[in-house]
Amino acid sequence: MKKDKVLLTGGTGFIGSHTAVELIQAGYEVEILDNLYNSKITALDNIEKITGVRPKFYEVDIRDGDALAKVFAEGNFDTVIHFAGLKAVAESVEKPLTYYEVNIGGTINLLECMQEFGVHKIIFSSSATVYGEPDSPLCVENLPVGRNLANPYGRTKYFIEEILRDVAISDPEFKVTILRYFNPIGAHASGLLGEDPNDKPNNLMPIVMKVAAGEIPELSIFGNDYDTPDGTCIRDYIHVVDLAKGHVAAVEKIGDVEQVQVYNLGTGRGLSVMEIVKAFSKASGMALPHKIVGRRAGDLAALCADPSHAEEMLGWKTELTIDDAMRDTLNYLEKQGVKIK
Ligand code: NAD
Ligand code: WQD
Image 1 (spheres, helix red, strand yellow):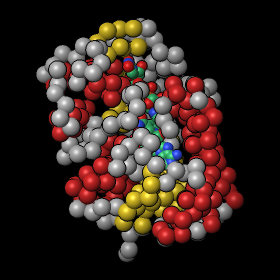
Image 2 (cartoon, protein in one colour; image 1 turned 90 degrees about the horizontal axis):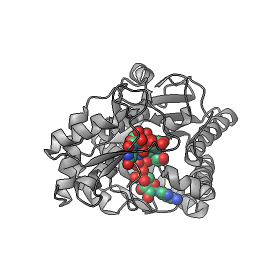
Image 3 (cartoon, rainbow, N blue to C red; image 1 turned 180 degrees about the vertical axis):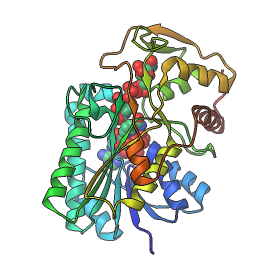
Image 4 (cartoon, rainbow, N blue to C red; image 1 turned 180 degrees about the horizontal axis):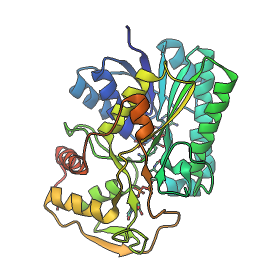
């Protein structure tokens, strides 16, 4: 049977580029739309080096409804994976309207185009952040979402989930898969793709990478007085290639499952910030400089996925370890010409 033609919005970004590789390698036709706000066009060269296929690329902003419509008029897509958006939590507090405009306004434009051009399947990049402050640190998909969300970024993800549910109610043909990612890290084993934000990094691993490269003197660990075994916060760090494979499984299944599906994509195992520091130090042979500073506002002590629904329904589970993620991160840095200090 012919495989779906898939449009990846935000497909030159960190998770999108790895997903493009896995989809192409699984036999899918992939096209990419991105405005290159937080990614580089060289991602396309690297996708081509890995797979032998250069996806068709549209340099388009999802806020531009007319430009989006032209893409859909040309594309004849079966499925859309919607990665495009802004994701810097602190920035979303400073510029809430920009986050609502890009993430929510952009998604509405995209959904309008899908309706106009008869594209009925969408997979959306949601986030563990929609669980807010869950009663249990182990998140299952049917926990309440949208309560006590700490920032506008998180609210955009929650609101988009709700918008998608409303569109599904209005159109029985419409199929929605919501993927709630936990903490993606790592890089492609080739060293050609990885996390390379255009702006200053916000997440733990990109900051660790800058410390290793000597661009930031030391990692500030936000608090060691949490109720966790070593006092530092616990998160579910998932290798980006495992995450990308989760998207392939979601594309394969979206036509056959109930209209709206929600899956956690995580490992089910939590690691503390200190364990991340140790894993990086072990892999690199350098003692990563770090110091303990005060807690960061809005951080939870522990958050971890229960990924059993994805395993049951998608036949997907993570395969790579934290040591794999650290090895691949270091390989990526080396290929970028970064010398570990
Ligand atoms: P990323 O920034 O690397 O990728 C997002 C891509 O969207 C970038 O290439 C960027 O240029 C593009 N983009 C931004 N604004 C755009 C616009 N107006 N029009 C077109 N393209 C635009 O981020 P990522 O880590 O790959 O995240 C992908 C998705 O997954 C995002 O929606 C993010 O919110 C979500 N997510 C990420 C994480 C994480 O920790 N990385 C966790 C949970 C959810
Ligand atoms: C991880 C851990 C920090 C930086 C965020 C979003 C979430 C999702 C993933 C998009 C925490 C600690 C960090 C530093 C530190 N993104 N840390 N020093 O906060 O779990 O989740 O990214 O959807 O929505 O909220 O990820 O990478 O910022 O932090 O000690 O300099 O590292 O306290 O425990 P977080 P993170």
